[in-house]
Image 1 (cartoon, rainbow, N blue to C red):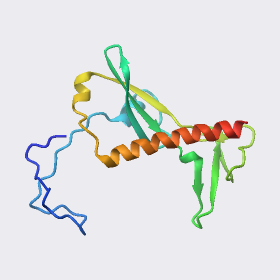
Image 2 (cartoon, rainbow, N blue to C red):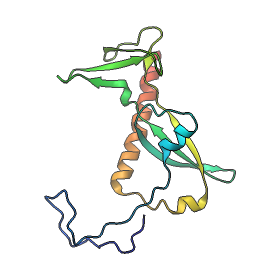
Image 3 (cartoon, rainbow, N blue to C red):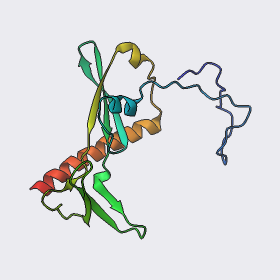
Length: 158
């Protein structure tokens, strides 16, 4: 992200609009890491949306950059708002719907959650900047959901 040339909108009201006024020059952004392209280049298909990121521990030659997918607890709903669990036999397999809090039948399981780890160097981390408060909130919520899902899976297994 480059703030050079961007308009200071501290005293600019953007309330009630979804468009940027012509007088405002936005911050310029540059793609830092195309996560989906990197995963697909390694033969990995992204099965769910990515919702959590974290800078992990130092590893040889850099740092770990962790991205977590969210399966939304495999919960989905009909057009009428009735929620249910989606159970699957895996990638390319079949799926069925079961009532919430019911176990998946033999051979089926809830959609998995994944954590992908990338190695990045210190110079790469310098361009990340400081996340906005909404990003921090989403990150914390994402990890909270992952923790809740793990707890739920343990409870279902018991």
